[in-house]
Length: 214
Image 1 (cartoon, rainbow, N blue to C red):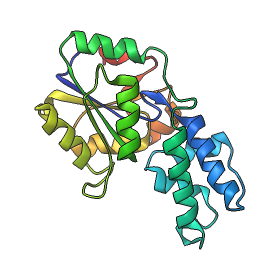
Image 2 (image 1 turned 90 degrees about the vertical axis):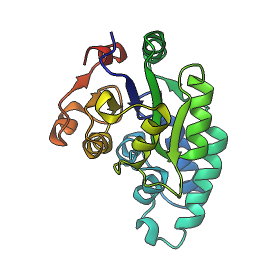
Image 3 (image 1 turned 90 degrees about the horizontal axis):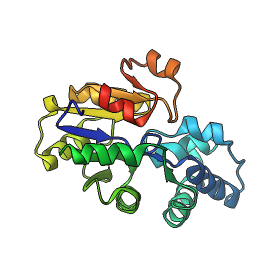
Image 4 (image 1 turned 60 degrees about the vertical axis):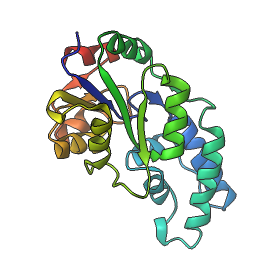
């Protein structure tokens, strides 16, 4: 049985396995502009702070590279077309959302992915369960700032003290801390348990349904 009135979820690495599509779009952009490609494990470590930061980490010399803007734009254009190529919910996620919905729990997604992709992916995979999905946009600070989570809670009409944040990265741990909310760190995403422990994580879920017990 759910212990909170609202569950705020990260998207990439928490609800959706997006890694292959992110890596493919990243390498398409790098390849197009004559830059060395990145391995899937490198891209795994680059994600978590939004796609601009992903590309800053992937491109040699980051945003100081004279080709940064055009390479980043190539990534965005490719990803908006190909973000459903291999992306799927992790096993057990749909069952979790179904259980939460049946218990009348409010749910939202808060992501550092750009707004259009966040909205499209949530509508495609979770439209029956999640109506509030907030991605990166210019008028609101991205995670780990608390702004997007506060906005989600406002739309859900739930106080932070009655909600929990669920994510897979150090950014999510810090986001929850900045919101003064408990955090459940999932272990099927982009970071290891040891890494998350070093970053202050204290509650862990090995499977989606374990989230209900935390």
